[in-house]
Image 1 (tube, rainbow, N blue to C red):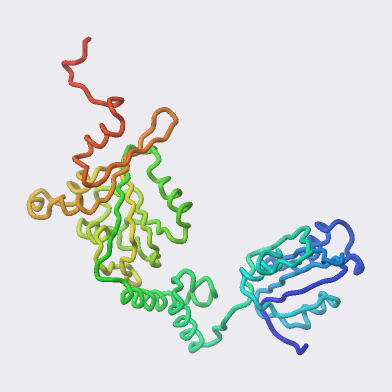
Image 2: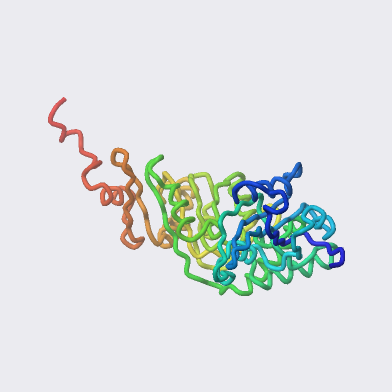
Length: 356
């Protein structure tokens, strides 16, 4: 093989015991790992000790350096190993080394495996110059990848974050209908009753890469969407009376295709579901952001009709509870609380107290 250059190498090392590697399979792959990493903690790799159908012990290795690595350099480290540049992506490589479908082989046994770092596998492209960078960004956006996914492909693409975001949102703007259905869930209740934990529930249900967590209300929320990358679920935590202008809150909770101001590059509202947590009721938020003289025209009905569902969170002892109410059945916060807790926390008049 010519002195090929690759950032990722795949190796098959047969009969490691015949080449000075002693001990259990765990000991052998651990020694191989330590040899590759050495004093360079930025190197990465996977090692799996296998037994073939015919009983041949061998080690599968994926070896990755901080940059491109020549064949001769890797061959010098493992002269008896069969080496090839890694051809598959990360998912394919891990499936092969673990012998998972579609790479499961009859009779092949994977006894143990270990890893170090986060291997990347074969890269589909190189970004050595500006033309390569622009072509790569265009290709990945057309494939439907989000800005976060694109920049995870190569750290050098992070230098083009603004360009990536602008191109991504321009494409998604054309793909998004002028109006769409947006579900709005208002989580309310006292502090410490489990409202914010709803974010964990969403991440477990849909995946944390599909849920955008919004909690930066500095400067009336201007920077809160700087990191938004088209996630379909928006989670706004701890909304307070002075957090956002009323018009921005209405824009966030409506279904129209809208542009939202960000500090560096504006974004488009692409979410289909919004979750808002607050110790305040919608009425309290409204009273805090709309002046009394404007409430006759800028009415609270604009906000209330956008809310699909209310979730009242509360605790009984150490037990967390939640009560759900459809938006069209909502009367006011006190009624919601009574429905949720029954008479457990019902207020009584002073004259009903049978003692001084």
